[in-house]
Image 1 (cartoon, rainbow, N blue to C red):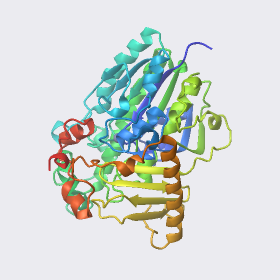
Image 2 (tube, rainbow, N blue to C red):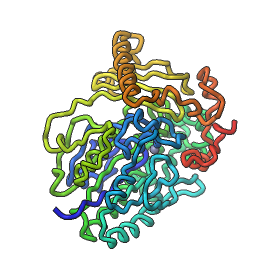
Image 3 (tube, protein in one colour):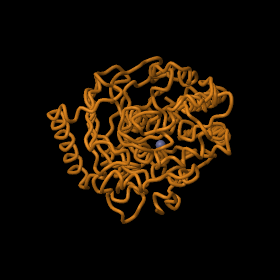
Image 4 (cartoon, rainbow, N blue to C red):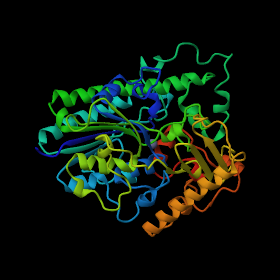
Length: 470
Ligand SMILES: [Zn+2]
């Protein structure tokens, strides 16, 4: 066995699993990713239990759940003491490490180099060539690293499926034929009347739009555009002769709500469209090609899996909560980690418990959608999570609450720290405000602003949206 393999981690922001052909989507959004899946192993049941971006990548890049990372909010800047990132550990093991498109976030710490590209913009700047901008910085960097002769770890954070969805032609209308401003259509009315996001939507959606199918098709077009650009990167690995010695992983920090659950075109709400993300692993000769696995897995499993594949099992920190998936990749029985503790804290502060049969969502304070404080869904009969059974099935609510609380107790005792979602106070960015007292209070207070203020919010620059300044 030669030197350690390279690791190319394509960690797309806001990519739903069910929008990819290899996950059964009806539209041809992803021929290159589908080919990657055919050459590697695909996990059909892969989950991001802690949303959105910062906790999602935080878990993915440390091998820990939210109790281990201490991160549950988009705006949090510090990991819990003792956390080490994949980049830090691989750096010590002799890897060169580069992060593309994720500078400044707590979850992306520890890389040797950070490269950025233009990933945000308004309608006035359309089309947004995000993935080509990524390739423009990533491809010379891959060439440089390949020439260096050391093993390398590169994280690519693609942003194309993250709003604003403004892909270039022909992808902008690849999946839409018609008039998105047809006065006979009304599906955009509830989107544009949601005041906390209305200014943000107006900054990048066409003026006068009436048909939400156009925005959904724009998301799909952005995925297809990104897929073509990822095809170019994969070809580069082949052309440079390193495809066989490179582990390629494709996943996402979280999914996306499109026209779902009133959480329009964002990624909040602990619904499966936000939690269910792709995981594809290709490593010729070590990971079987064309295999599809139904065992449940989650972001915390990625670090132990990659380290074992890379021959670095001894470097996995002792306190990770994830498990290496190499046994199930090799055909072993499931690990039975099929129940998930869920958290979110960007626009709503909630937690929940997911089993293969049931989803429980509990609000820790009133939310700006005026949703009920407890939601219960029968995932087998109602996979779209449309019918709230919290009142009809109180015994299921009680049992799931009991399991969730037992898990919280077990994890807080193990870490010696309080539950991060329960002690997070300024998650909404308004220092000193405290928890919202009502949904009206949350609805009046929270506001994204423009595409530029959304970008600054996520980069943690000055907490600049009106959510912070009033
Ligand atoms: Zn994200």
